[in-house]
Image (cartoon, rainbow, N blue to C red):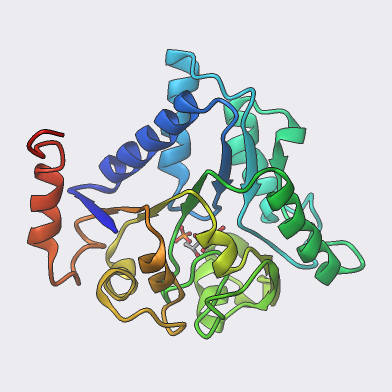
Amino acid sequence: MDVVISPMPHTAAERAGARVAEAIAANPLLVLGVATGSSPLGVYAHVRERIERHGLDVSGITCFALDEYVGLPEDHPQSYHQVIRQTVTEPWGLRADQVHVPAGTTGDPRQAALDYERDIREAGGVGLQLVGIGGNGHIGFNEPGSSLGSRTRIKTLHPRTREDNARFFGGDMDAVPIHCITQGIATILDAGHVLMIASGAGKADAVAKMVEGPVSSACPASALQLHPHTEVFIDDAAAAGLLHRDYYDFAVANADSVPGA
Ligand code: F6R
């Protein structure tokens, strides 16, 4: 993993946003995996700036969201259909048909999960996947104990996740749905390039386990150690638990100085 530590959350978001913009510029037909939650908002804002000020062309990209709550109507303000519409689709000027979110309100969510996995595959797979990390180490909504070989499926949200996400539901944990459809860990690992974005002291323990802990379903994000191209953009506070922090900084400082390269 390449761990890039920035002094402030907005610097981490700008660096990650620059990566997303570069990937779109290099491949205008990019299949981009998008996350919800607070962590990627600065990344999305940076990409929007590239679109508006620098003419970045996003008309050919396709987006796939990581997850969706089961049973929350698509027009509910906290459904991920709405969240992605408000943070990505509309600000970036994408057409609705460019953006896919798992269908959490069909009569058959299990089939909806299978269909979503197939849709990703038929789109040629995700080229660049943006992910956040839960305080309990989840990626997507792959909670602790998730199979590292999992595919898109229904999961039960961990009480910690429902507690963390209660802030989006007026502070009421009981209003947070119990189930979701999430891309699996193996689905996420299929992406060509994974960008993790995290900030704040509340993520420090999970980030340390993800980067330096054993690969274990106890910290689902640790599965990213198996991915050949994962970049982790974090701020100082989220880096606080890393044992080898000095080394990561040294590696970044010397990234462009390989003799003969
Ligand atoms: C969101 C998702 C989750 C979040 C994670 C962090 O689609 O799959 O894994 O990325 O819960 O959430 P925030 O960024 O709100 O701290």
